[in-house]
Length: 297
Image 1 (tube, rainbow, N blue to C red):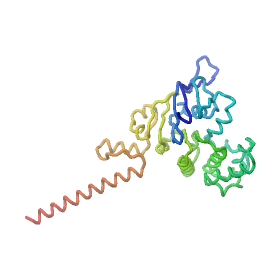
Image 2: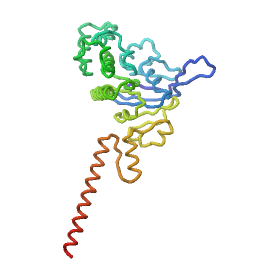
Image 3: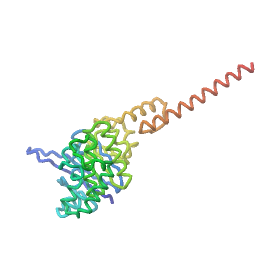
Image 4: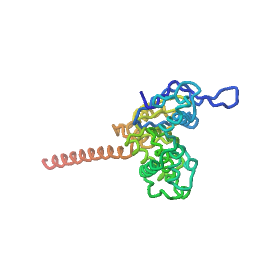
């Protein structure tokens, strides 16, 4: 059984119109402990609604969401569920509530009535985990976008969650900020925290263990990054595209020039270098053979 289980989950937004708008339609999904899951999809595909269902911020219209066996519809377990699953949003400015970094990280544990000594320990550990310990007394509004998002993640880590859900957490950041946050996410996952990353950026999905592609409130594709990105035509039909590196790889494969399933620029470069080395070696051998034949005549 997964740490989070969605069983035939649908969610309807009350638009006030006669026709119901279902953001999710009969979705079933199992998220395993320690997994790095990436959920991708175009705008309106239902991925952000799914993110909010994972920690009970939204409750399913039908079906069940279970977090470590706890039903999100059970009001008595709401706090335990939100301690287990931390949710990081798109805009870091909307998640910071105090004027000092360490106070912001301590905000949630203080509201839970945790002992002050324990809070201090948690704050120090959380800031260290995201590489922001030297900014403990800084003013959040003076930080870069990437730094603010790292502070927001630290605030979640101070709750000691087992699952971290990031809903478009890098979409408002510049490339440097994105790289900072992605690096932190990968390290947290390597330390055992389950990661669920919601994103529109297909390049970010490459680093996941599993990719789920959403479309019109349903799961359209699912598998490892290699399995999902091998279905380029299916992704395009869903108004998505493969990462640029994978697109280049697919073009080379189609021309019979590259028998590989590389996903990153580094992997692709390594395979191309091997081919060049092999071809160069063969060319040298052919040249040497021709010269030897000429000399013998």
